[in-house]
Each structure stands twice: as structure tokens, then as C-alpha cells.
Image 1: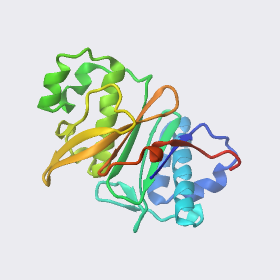
Image 2 (image 1 turned 30 degrees about the vertical axis):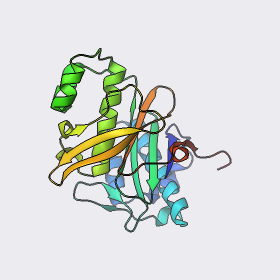
Image 3 (image 1 turned 180 degrees about the horizontal axis):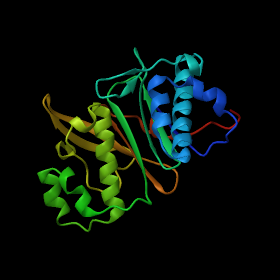
Image 4 (image 1 turned 120 degrees about the vertical axis):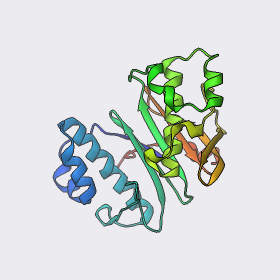
Length: 226
């Protein structure tokens, strides 16, 4: 397991060549974005992803081939497994040789209203949350944990967030915490880890198996000298 955080405020000079690395699906999403700033950040994240995967596969970035699940989740046939999330000018990428991993990041400057999140809680979570002081930062953190779990499952909006039960603590700690997910295949006990991200952001990782503490370090990308 290795985790990177990517600064999406990149200089303009590499784009004429690097944009050609993106496949048809990525190119279409890039051109659908109405705001130039959003499009550049999208491209920066996906170019960085290809560089990261290329390093894992020992090939060139333009030779990385992605396939897509029925829910449009990208993956590398034969591995490695990866998950990517972006918010504002930051992206997080996790790569592992173990399947079932999901990562999510959100910017803390987003307004969070309790009423927006009423439908995402399980009955058990709702009973506890009603007795707590629900600061916007805590609500956003819980949302990020749930989103990471749904990404690990790979079903997108087909998985109701109310069937993902996350720890309601402010921090999970270095050893993570248990997370319960229910679907048609039964009930699963996974692990959720809050990540040390850039100031102003909240990030979480969800895996089906425990992760060694040293593997939860978040590396800057590109590394110095790249």
C-alpha cells in the first residue's frame, strides 16, 4: 500500500503532451467541464495517476491501460488496485496489491448542513448523533468515511450510504477503526483510517484488511527532484 497527495495547481507547460496520455473516457470528461480551472485540475489529477501507476508497473505513463466497471470505476486489468479522489486543489491516490480499497478527500471550506445529510445515516448512527454536538467538521469527516467505503465497494450510488456504519469519533487513530457495510452479499467488517492530509482537507481510506501503520504515510507528488 502506498498513498500520495497531489497538488493540482500545476504549471501550464506540460499539458500539450501530457493530455494525450488520457484515454477516450478521460478526454470526454475533461472537455465536458465548463470551467477551465476545473478542467485543468481534472487533467492534473489523471496525468499524475498515470505517472503513479506507470511507476508501479514499470512502464511509460502513456502505456497505462485502464478498463471501466459497469459503474464506470476505472481499474487496471490484472492490478495493481487503486482509488483516487479529488477536492479543490488536492487529490489523493492509494495503490495496493490487495483489492477492496477506497479513498476520499474533501475540502474543509465546504458548507455542511445537517439537513443535507439526514438520509445517509443508519438507524444506529442516527440514535447516537441525536445526542451529540454535530459540528460541521465532524459531519464532513463522517461523510468522507462513508464515501471512501462506497468507493472500496465499487458500486457508486447503487450502494446506499445508510448501509455504511462508520465510527462517530473525531479521529480514528493510527490503527484505524472498524466500519460495517451491509449489502446483498451480507455484512462486512472493514477498516477505516483518517489520513494526514494537507491543512484544510479531510481524507479517509477504507480497506477490507488491516493496513500497517507505516503504509498510511501520505507522500507528496511529485517527489522532490521529479
